[in-house]
Amino acid sequence: MITCRAPGKLFIAGEYAVVEPGRHAVLTAVDRYATATVDEVGDEVITLRSDLDGGVTLSCGRGGGRLVPSTADGVVPPNFTYVFAAAAIVERLLAEREIAARSYRLSISTDLADGDGRKLGLGSSAAVTVATVAALGRFHRLGLSPMDRYRLAMLATVSINPRASGGDVAASTWGGWIAYSSPDRQRVAELARQSGVDAALRAPWPGLSVRPLPTPTGLAMQVGWTAKPASTPRMVAGLGGADADFVSRSDHCVQRLTAALEADDSLGIRTEINCARELLVTLDTKARLGIMTPSLRALCEAGEAVGAAAKPSGAGGGDCGIALIERTRRAAITELTGRWIAAGIRPLSLRTHPFEGDRR
Ligand SMILES: Nc1ncnc2c1ncn2[C@@H]1O[C@H](COP(=O)(O)OP(=O)(O)OP(=O)(O)O)[C@@H](O)[C@H]1O
Ligand SMILES: C[C@@](O)(CCOP(=O)(O)O)CC(=O)O
Image 1 (cartoon, protein in one colour):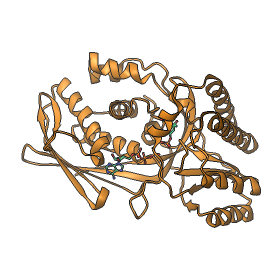
Image 2 (cartoon, protein in one colour):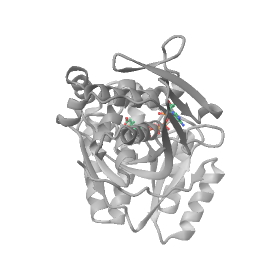
Image 3 (tube, rainbow, N blue to C red):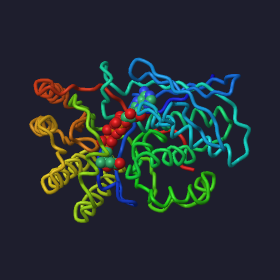
Image 4 (cartoon, rainbow, N blue to C red):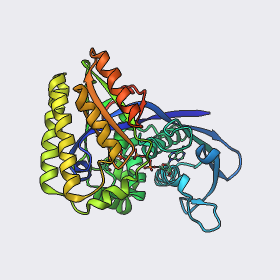
């Protein structure tokens, strides 16, 4: 049996701007995981299992080098959208490399939802995609590098959500704190369609960059969950086209944040987190996206009241927010979490999942 796990993520800064190819975001991987296990089976059927909704199963077959769901209408159920897409991309790679495909049973579980099954906004879709690719890569002995795994997971993600930046996929693949800029997804999807998946692993991906950053030593990161799941694709669709002024300001803010992180400059980091929040608030006011829900506003105000730099993490509209505050200010941290709880925000106890792997 093969078991691989992939961590969840938090956006630190650069949300929305990173949707534009070549624009930057900072993310961190956290110690909540998707876990994929793969077993070989003797028959022809491929079985995908998930812990969603108390346990669900999807049987699949193979046809013309492709994975085919064995459902009455031929449609993949929403619970399996990402796991199936990941398995399907690996299947295409096997066919292109003329590797004899063995049948398997793949099971996915995560601790990226709360007890009632509500997503926490920690990137469960990316984590299940990355874990599935990693586990199947090992099962089929494909010798995948981290960059191969990112690219396969990204091709799977883009087949479902063409606008996704893939910041979550990168954080889940490499771990740690990273600076990330997104590839031109239309081009990479076209590349895979025209030249194949294997060729897409070797070709340049314009716009893509991934750089590990040091974890700040002087700051603690507090995470608050609003208990309201938000739909990222819906939020991004609300934006329509890119706001050039916001994108350029956000990119500069993220570049300064990256420099502050590299210098382990706590004040500089907090300054840029505050800047990133203000940019999101301005974008929200202009485009009426609903990023700043009453809960996220309360989360940020509590941060300001105790001298922490706070902002929504990700698309907003619900999910999580973060607050960075000097590690030594224990009383202020206690006051912050107290204020959050009073406002109905649940503190999540999360640590950074460390950087692992190279950047090949
Ligand atoms: N345990 C799981 N098993 C299989 N698929 C899962 C599992 N958890 C999540 N997924 C997939 O991810 C989808 C949820 O993705 P969604 O983008 O809504 O959440 P998220 O990635 O956690 O949120 P965010 O992007 O805001 O961090 C599910 O519909 C399902 O397809
Ligand atoms: C708004 C966006 O930049 C971040 C979304 O983050 P999250 O899925 O809400 O954590 C979208 C994206 O990067 O694909």
